[in-house]
Length: 236
Length: 115
Image (cartoon, rainbow over all chains, first blue to last red; front, side, top):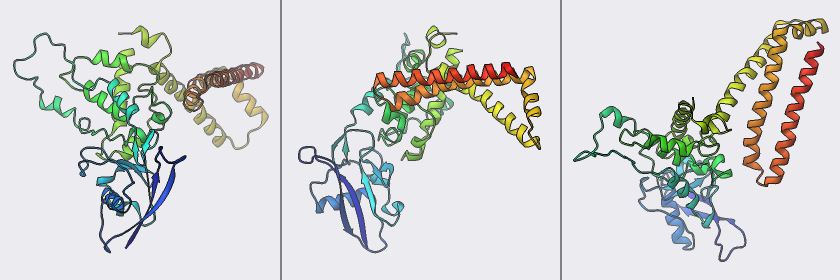
């Protein structure tokens, strides 16, 4: 069985413009494989093909790619899930391309940094051992802490494409709500006041592309809705 | 607690609430007009004029026109600030579109006044 690929190629040191390059891979009949395994085999054919990967099991978030028009992690996307035709692989949309399938994530990380992704607790008398949470308080973090920052969601969001310098993006906002919902964090007012402008949160129009592409099955739109509600309650 | 930043100047929360509040009025007006056309077998000039001669309908229509103006003002600002990166062109387009939305309100007011 032959698998056909069309892969985005661009080396700014050599190429004037990006191009799509066709590849073919011979695989055993009826055998499935992950897109990352196919890419690794293609790299044996053409060692100049560049992509990121690390854990190979959907934990590190390094190999976020656009496969047949939809963002996802190459290591947990089976080739069979992409249909029978040619598989088109591009870098994550909206971010500057460093080379081939590798993008510059600086804008994404800058937005993530803005939300202060760490616990802030100004408790004057911290407990001797650790801050305790009830099971109910801990449960509020489910569906939030699992984000691996692969950027599949933010780079599928048109609002992030148009305003990557001002809109935090779904991944950053999911993390923002993770700390707003945390009973151990005392900086709720500070966090909300930093998000209270026309762009940081409110550029989300709830089209749910982020939910559709999240490889971990998370729901950033719901978290963003919770932040909007908190901002509204704070204003009225 | 009303926070100055969130209540007086235009910001995300205010825009978000305004868009939804105006959308409710616009939706009710649209539904009422659909119901009017569905429930009226033949729309004659007299029936059409009679509909808009009632004071409540004049107020409802004018309120809807104002809501459309507010909705357009915020919605188009969001669209233009997404797609038009040249600041001068964006401001010019915003100015023209706001003017157009205001003209709709004025024309609507004069039409209602004359019924």
